[in-house]
Image (cartoon, rainbow, N blue to C red; front, side):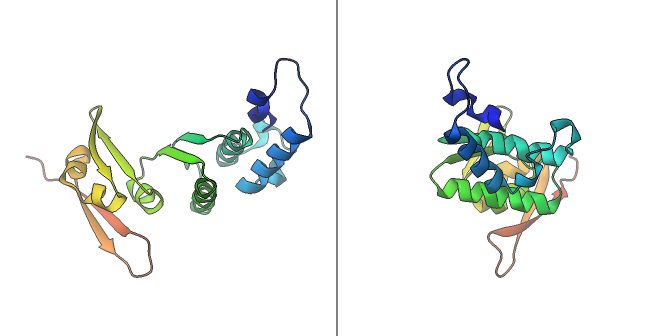
Length: 164
């Protein structure tokens, strides 16, 4: 995680207490402080994913860019990750994530941008994007949203479009 502090140091400059504090905050924020003494090669794929997020947070960025941040994570760790990203977002850090799990993306995102064939196919609130005809065309499926009382947004089902 200390590599996340590299942008704050010049060549050959030692890490200082400020760096240690930033790393400790990132470890605590991601809930993986207990992994700090472990070697990277001993971590599971999911644990490595969380350490990558912690390294990014240790940089204290203004914007966090993530590509499939929940890959390799079990459902419990996915929920933990997205709660952490919500906390990060509330501190004023912009969070932009590529997420192919549409239902997970809709449950988490404040805004969704759907790309299809290199172009923006839909942009807006997640429920509106997934309800759009463009979303169904982009994935070749029928997307149905199901409202559930007490649940943010809809729950989604995806059905293949008949050939033709």
